[in-house]
Amino acid sequence: MSPLRDVAQLIWLVPALPLMALALVGGRVLLGRAHGDAAEPLTARLCGLAALGSLCILLLIDLGALLYGAPGYRLFGAWFASGRWQATLSFLMDPLALAVATVAALIGWLVMRFSANYLHREAGFHRFFIALCLFLAGIQLVFLSGNGLLAFVGWEMCGVSSFLLIGYAWERPTATGNALFAFITNRAGDAGFLLGLGFAAAWLGSFEWPSLTAPGALTMLSARLLAFGFIVAALAKSAQLPFTPWIARALEGPTPSSAIFYGAVMVHAGVYLMLRLSPLLAQVPDLMAGLVVAGVVTALYAWLCSLVQTDVKSALIFATVFQVALMFVAIGLGWTTLATIHLCLHAGWRTWQFLMAPSWLALAPHAPRPAPAWLQRSQLLYTAALERFWLDRLALVLLAKPTAGFAHDMQELDTQFIDRVVGEPGRGDPVQADLPLIAADGVPGRLLAGVAQRCQQVEMHLSLRGRGGAAELALRRMGLWLRTVEHLLERPRYLMMAVMATFVVIL
Image (tube, rainbow, N blue to C red; front, top):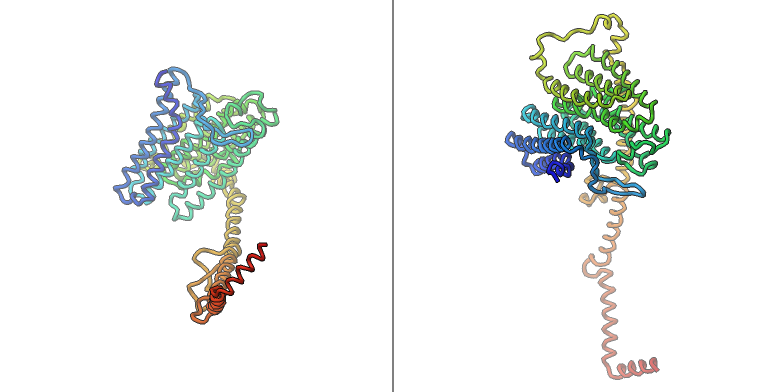
């Protein structure tokens, strides 16, 4: 068999290599060997080599696919099982997965190289590369996994790394607030993904993509409900209405993370999910029409908002949302090949634009154009575009503030009730005023302290009161009695009486 065909067996290394680099860099940080400028090159080199290794493996698989055909579905083993279904470690290497994964690997490697210089002497240099490796591993699982459950693992890895990089400057309340806002909003999409997986487990007994997209495997109602869950996940991850507001706040992170996350790769994860499930969507034309409507409305929203932006990154992000919306329109119309080509070309183009954003003022020969005159004449529409149609505030009121309020209430419950009942390590009041070193906190701690105090009192009463204690007197009396009995048994007459009594009892 040709080596190019065998290299498909190494597909698991594509997400594994960034995880290995993450472990190595994380180990250096934990061991205290990642301090100062001298530690930066090794971190950048490890992560860059991991990204390059993933890219090279994918390029070899691509070459083999061109010569011998795409490797297709590969099963590497079972992850775990429950009842009649099991989670597998499977990969799907069809033309769609290989094309998108290769573009993502190339962009990931380029961003790694760019970040090594861009983040030089940043306090969170190693932390940034750790989060970026986590993202590269997660996004490759999304693109290459052969089943929805493994894809969901990668989906969540991308979400966690996104949260970490939006809040990269954690000492700034704006950064942590925006990270929390994006994290909460995307949880609605995760709920949709889990809903789809739950329906797949109940109705199909499998999470494998070929099983989910097989024609005739589900009734019309079941197919509609299953597809709806994944559509919600796709709309949230790709920042389509009504989930669009989070992506503008996500630009709080460093420029390289903005490029690879929200300009090039992660923003297209929802588009890829819809392309992967396109055979299932073809069975429910009403949901495909819904994708068209959502894409058109989002494109109109992004276009109007982009006309009034005054900074480069905000203008780019609304342009990105506009292009991604057009991809959803294409998928809804059944033009999946066009959407795939659009995805790959847009990802490369937008990466270049975001990475050049810090130099835009030096590169642009003229000031940005003002909003069109027709928009300025409509005061209501102009104000709505400036306010982004108040969706940001609406999401803040409906999602972020209730979640923050719930977290605050839980913290109050912990502080005012649970901590007082259970106790906290290192805190507590002295059990006795004359013994300040013995402190207890919470009901269990005070109960244990009370038991210990009673045991100590018993011990003091019995054996720790010196000569003349109750225990000592009792032992002395018992010793006198035993000694008297021993002396009596040593006399012959009493010994003979004991022997005769023994015989009487035996007989």
